[in-house]
Image (cartoon, rainbow, N blue to C red; front, side, top):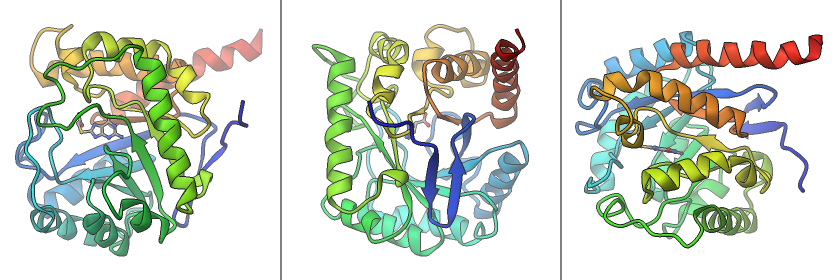
Length: 283
Ligand code: 7PJ
């Protein structure tokens, strides 16, 4: 088994992976399901990012194209129009800024504007994406998705979801390394909710340690997702408790980074887990 990675390099930042990291989500899309439209104004999006850092976010993820089930893609020009004013105001944020995008053109512009991580739900499969990231020192999150957002939830099917997701991620790591992206810059993510039924999601959650065996740190994104909504009453706001439970379970199963909307609450939940872990040493 490869040695556990202890550092994630994001440009000039070196994040030490000795405790679970929290990535705070900032959406600048008019149609995101959980906070759609609220942060469209660049100033409001920047203020939200700063607040999440105050709440304890170790990194911030900014997305300008919705990838919710059924969403249609947008042209790069539109994505850049939403994204660039936000990025320009966050150069002094103090933590790495990640950009959630699948387009090489957007990756290059974001990196030039100071982004130090690319979070790609298509794992750098677009032509030119590997090269766009390789040419920089940014980190990259390689995520698994079956199909594409517009149609991915129609009939997701796997013979063995854990084996298939693991094989896909291993292939994308090999492609990234062959393109010149160092291991220290890689994060992998099984892509909860991306071409997966609730059952697939929970099977992956239970077996997250097998995904971790590949090597790079594992990121888990459960926050406010519909497979949690299916278990709880109320709308997206009511998904907080379920999201916290899922984040804790993910960390217990080996996730090193959790991608969440509710940073302060997640930090508090993780503090309980850390205290429980520390008490083992006291015995
Ligand atoms: C994820 C993501 C995720 C990674 C979204 C949402 C939908 N990137 N981007 N992992 N989800 N790496 O925020 O619920 O799970 S968009």
